[in-house]
Length: 421
Image 1 (cartoon, rainbow, N blue to C red):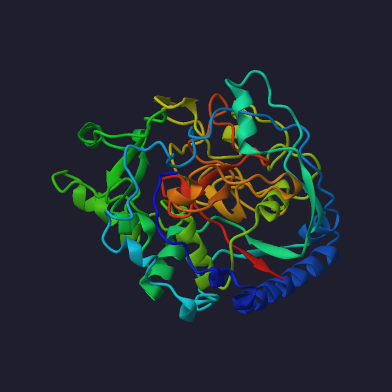
Image 2 (image 1 turned 90 degrees about the horizontal axis):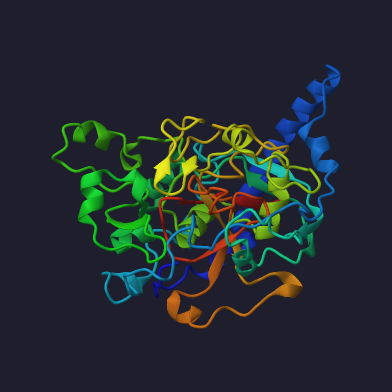
């Protein structure tokens, strides 16, 4: 949550009238799904995704718990050693570049986009009223996350992408629009210290106070998630060819994605960012009272088989090799989906929502002092990331949340789009 005073995207980027292409695409997906269901019925097969949708009667997660303070595994915090970049970065006053109204929906049928999964919506309780478990250090600080008390909403039918936005999809967006991300405009982004070679780590003299595992790396962006490859390395050419900006790691989630970047991508795709209520509904997968997308068992062995979270002792002793084979970001679909067929609803990268962090229905609060001077409103992020661990950041639970300003970026920030039906 670095204090960056940069203008937000125009509100019309999320105008529902721009999503007609997505609606057509969803209808096509529904027809295909109907054909599959008819074939399944003819074969007298097991329960279908559609029946799971129809049976959805979610209520608040009654078994959720707490964890540690919000700077633990989220992105950059407001306590960064760098000041507001509005007067430091060339072009910062000009706002986001490359994508505009002319590109809205232009990429709606691009083959790199994730499939949209239609969901029925209906009555739903957002958040939890469960107390945090006492075994997690300083769990009481989770009150600041505003996870509870729960509140009721009525959700219209909608669709959610089955995976997080991949590097392949984001590259297609950039190629089509010339879009420049916030991390690229500012010239740097935050990277988890364990992802950096020792020589680069030693050359960086600043860090986030209280979360020293976050280091500002020049040149880090979705194109080069760990920063540019040093030319003097013997394997520099090979490593450079594998960077997302050069077509590598195509099936990994795009990272260093700010809220501005995510909103612009979803608009180009004829989609939008999900609300926090939609995201929680989708994450529960049609089940009542789930703590995690797969159920309530969050033991280490169970977790390693179902979500990409930190394994070992956070932050300085990661398990080598990691039990699940993924030290940091994992390719999408590396873990089983939830009951709705959605992948990585826990771990991998944080996912932006369109919901302002303090907007909690009848329990909403005013923004913190100085929010307007720190880059505008903070938006809720969901799902946790590969850096979350129960001993410190316990935010891979469905009801868990964190917040960042619209232009904040880091190595574990990604996105997933939604669409209206």
